[in-house]
Length: 395
Image 1 (cartoon, one colour):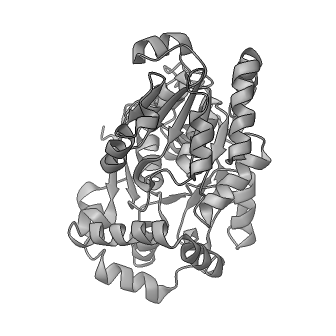
Image 2 (cartoon, rainbow, N blue to C red):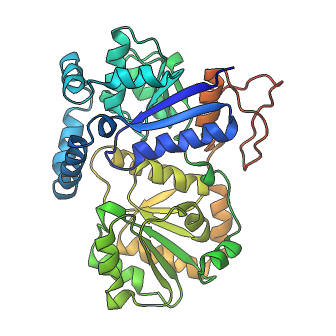
Image 3 (cartoon, helix red, strand yellow):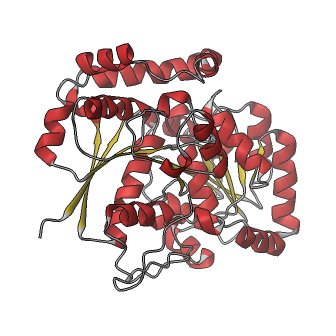
């Protein structure tokens, strides 16, 4: 019998959209290996010369003119992509999208970015007969995510569901699954053992994530971070920003045995488990990974728009605070004075049941008619056996 095929389309504007696609694909394969998944950044796949130039221009705009990005987000917040825009996107960048679909023959298409979702919705309107799921990868829902041809929306919270239904989407088409994270984030590991494995000191530890955007906070915050290096371990994880890594490694201030400066790491899950506090930008994926690990978070330099909404959501939930030097001082004092109590607090910060990190993958499998095989036994990741009744996530 032919295996079910899931085709996931994303775009590389930031790392979260594609990260969510890969996380969902890995979760689906773990829960049911009989389902095949393929992730494609559609614009880059179809236009490998033009797409990187567009992404580079976007990154420069976000870095140099974040207020402009925020203004565009807000002024267009309630405006979906019209038919003329979808036609232009298809003609200029996505002419061969249908050929890709016909060649791969998916049983389900999932889009984790609004542009491929708009392109696929246009193809469906023209006769493409493949179900389209739209996975919204933030804690807000811009109107560009909405397409009449979408068969289902997978969203992070009930609030996002309310935003969609307020825009005319039928409630039956919106399922609250939480944002998917890689199965490596589905369970926690022993902190002491991990620190030994990673060559870290077994002392209060703070993970600071920068990446391609750099570390966008001022000297006062950096001074607060480094003031207690003798007692608190700092792990700077800068992603693929090699220039920033080299600059930081050459900084005498950071030449300390309790400071680690890393580039790209495939072990962010382990670093979160080994750490007691996370300092990061409030990207949807990173926030969700932090929530899955139960780690307290401090947010800096939210990009106006969806990152501001992500920040607002986690701050209101009591899982994060906005970074400044006073907040750093407060948390560092807590790490030194009330360390055992903070670990108990972390256990209570784990994701609520309806937002368990495996829920999105489980829901997709249920809706695809290929429920999880019941063999996976991870933290909170109970899955039904083949002969059990399918358990659906409440929309």
